[in-house]
Image 1 (spheres, rainbow, N blue to C red):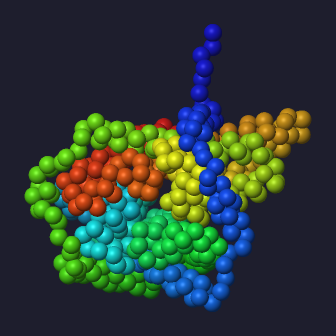
Image 2: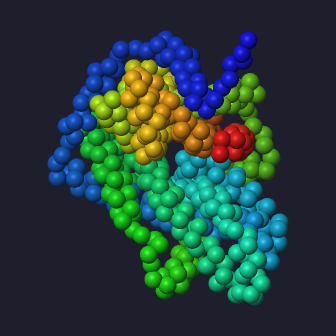
Image 3: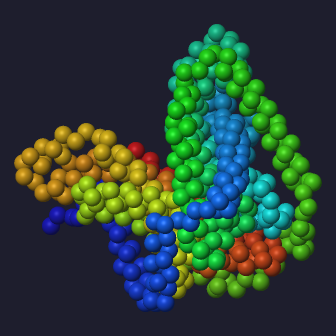
Length: 500
């Protein structure tokens, strides 16, 4: 008897099975009380509220969003490059730097990127109060670590023979180092860095829901008053900002630049780095700090956690990550396969755009109109948001690849869906799964957002502990979140290495 053999294509569709427990719990918790409100929310997307007062507020909030997002993006890119170089093995082969520095930086980066910017934001707000600086610092902390990892991976691809040649001719180390790293850094900045700007805008919008400022604050205030037409005005404004920023940066050609640009770039990088360090020192020591309830709580953990309750919240967070990842991986290929025609693809693109546009906290608040808080509801929300992102990548890759096999199968009379599956998708399944493994790292960290809003897992407990200034409990929760994220990153790293 032949054994069942799984391949990347079948593995991609297998996580759709998570829909069985999700659907069961959602049906049990379903109630019709909020259906009318939900209809009003959907219809309001077509008739947003537009008047002078709304337009003025929209422009003001967009300016705040641009300031926070661009500042945090620029600083995180610059320090991401610096720490990416300092954490790469090649730097230590080229420069005489102590090896313990690399290990310390890598450990620091792993810890900081394992915790989501929302958690950093909530903690900093509890310590320093609410101001724009909180948004910039909260986004910068994990973004610097994420950017550093990506830049480091690209720098590692530099040919070692090039380094040996520079050493043999006794090239000036600093200038040679800049020249050597210039191409991979600029290439990464163009391919990944500009995407991080879009992520920074979205992160700013989500932080705004917690009162930081920007468009997110207006979105949340409109939702609280059930003013859905006004809410959609702000959401369409956010969409306009994302589209315009992407269009502008696509026009910038970072490769066709004069030679003087290299020197100017280093000067600007140094100035912004120095300014950022000064600002960070000022932020830490000169802001009005809300005092901890007891400094001993940071040193001695006297948590009042019930071990059973904490374990339950810990497992809920893991389940939320697994279920959300299952939805994000399986939904795009499944629905593209089912609705494999021009109208179906157009509908999928439109729906995925909306789920990328609307922040996950707003999505779950809308769904809570007709469903009770649960792991399934939070998993569906986070899964749909990330499925919208993975579907965008999948559609781009599917329809830019060679279609000869797909056309040949159709000309032989093979069914359209079968032709799509074996003629197009099979070629993309492996790379798609590799990207989904990377996306799972983000999903694990994003569980904090849904936990805080949806009263699920460690995110809910974090909000409770912060509200009561229980810093010992906060430290335990941060350790738990960090552990889940780091273990998930290691597992996903193994999966990606096996797929690429």
